[in-house]
Image 1: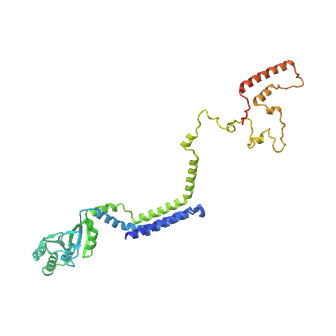
Image 2: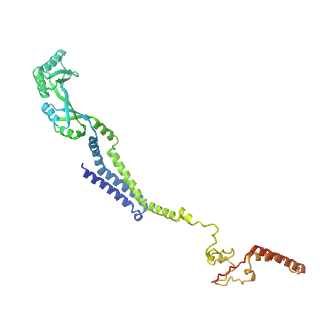
Image 3: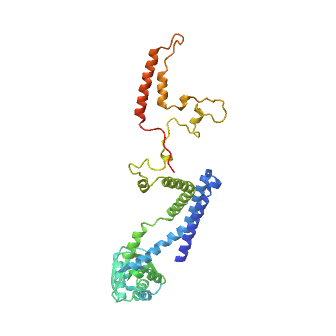
Amino acid sequence: MDALTIIIMIVLFVLAMLFVFSTSLLTPYIGKKNLVSVILLGLIVGLAAGAFLLTPIMDDIPDFTRTIVEESVDGTDVIELDLSTNGNLTNIIQNISSINGVERIDYEGITIKIDEDFDSNTEKRLIMRALNNSNKQISNVIEQDNKTFIVVISEDGDPQEVLNSIYNTFSHETYTHLRYTAMNANATVQANNITKILAKISENDVVVLNVTGPTETQNAFFSQFMPSGTNIILASGILGVIVAIAGFFLDALVTFVNNFRKKRKKKPSEREKIKRKVVPGTETKGSPRRNRRRRSSSIDIFDESFDESPKQNIGSNKHFKQLTVDDFNSDDELKTTKKEKPKKRFSFFNRSSKKDTKSEEKKESRNEENKSKKRGTPRFRPRKRN
């Protein structure tokens, strides 16, 4: 998969998530009771996008990481090969050696396996001696088990000639039949070009058995962290559900943030608090109307206390009260008048006397002295001259 295809698939996956998000944003119109349907939509779209868009990309990631590792790794890798004996072994080895990046090819010999056991040890010794004498390029015959032998080829020997001599020996000097023949070889190649080398080697009659070296070690390390296709699909479905829930509650979250910002704007900052501090001794400065203290007995006609006030005479005169002299007196004067009033239990027995009048005059004089001491300043404000 090329880079353009990967980019297109990623863009399509993002568009699928945007579709889920935009659909969940319509909750003010479709109703918040449809939360279950929104979650199901996100789950289905996420699973489908993961199966058809993300899984093919993840399958190609190992090859992508291999190319990155090859460019950053120095050294050599060893490729274990199984050469086909049906073709010309010499030509196959030469073709592999001519590939750019292949340093050398090492091989031990040809493996042969027979169909049945030998009748006696004497027959086995005769066959092994015949194989050694069949070709000068055969240095030794090693027995692995009762039916498997390795014909060791001497250095710079021709593998195809050794194979032909093996066939002639089994066809003319014994009645034992060969089951199969095989040849293994190890190709030492450059690690930073191993992918291209493997592609060219596969064009010949060769089977790659194993690859060892720094490239495969790092690839194995990175492959441990690669998720499987099932995990990718499940993760994509969960992501779709999360996106759906985020879009569903986005409206409530935005309103909450806006309200929180408004509350923070109403609170004065530290700088504003410093600006609003008043210099000591200047609290009463300013216009006289603003700093005028209200009397505790004053009534605001726009306040609820006006309805319960006995002094109100606006509107209907249903509860009209005639103003008296006591209404114009201050609070202290009203208290003194209340104290001056005697308790009348039996009014028809009480009569006025001179002693009472004298005591009342003394009390009045005392009250006037106390008032003058308490007042200190006049109760009226002089008008300003123009």
